[in-house]
Amino acid sequence: MVSPVVRVNPDGTVTIKTPCENTATVSGVTAVGPVDVVIDPGHGGSESGATGVNGLTERTVNLEVSKHVISALTAAGLRPLLTRTGDYRVTLSERAKIAHLANPRAFVSVHHNGASDGPRDGPGTEVFYQHSSSASRRLGGLIYEEVVAALKQYQGIAWQADTDAGVKTRLNTSGGDYYAMVRQPAPVVAVLAELLFLSNPPEADLVARPDVQSAEGNAVARGIVRYLTTPDPGSGYTEAYPRTEPAGGGGGLSGCTDPPLQ
Image (cartoon, rainbow, N blue to C red; front, side, top):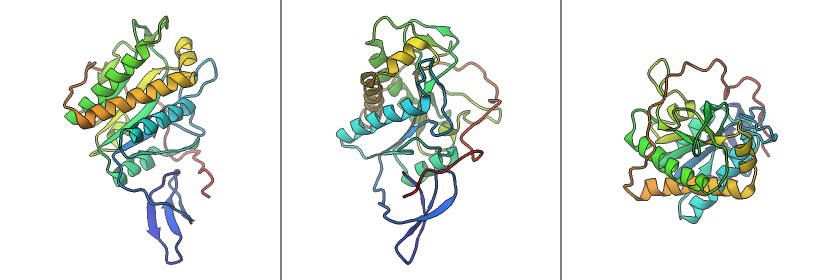
């Protein structure tokens, strides 16, 4: 588990901020060193996210894919960090706090989608970037390129998508970024990637495969490495269609239960 430190106590214990924004005193803590990239597996615990007809939950596949991202980034010589390391809730505010304290060069929130608009000739991957950041836009375009190229290798999939699939920014009614994990990590460069649609049975069956989870994670990592090491511009940029504020929510304190801390 990754948690912000509130204070180091005289007896050697450490008071931390828990994933549900409580405070707790623990021992045996290992400090996180310099961090290049923070990877944020979306949802977790009682917040399942999208669910496929095959029973695959977004919270599970997001974490598995994110672990592959971490492995690939580590192999590339980078220092990555996960916002959650298991199947438990983490509030959006705590995820953003980890980003602020780690101060990485990039923050990527990994998700899988639900409720598409209809069929598409190819993967309906979406990446949302910070509207005021050209760096975030480029990061999104590079991740999009790599993920779509990786998914296209799987033949005979009846893909689905939103009509504005691609790399885009979406604003809320206040003029800020619509999604919390794009908005709240700022000034850290951040994007939110929706890799494919769990609500589409063929795609849910595809991403249930460990080899596909690995392919997705490696693709996200390649996009990040290209962002950090090349001037490549990325591609897939489009305009998001208007959308009102979500009626529901998630990622807050309501119903949040901390995992075991020791």
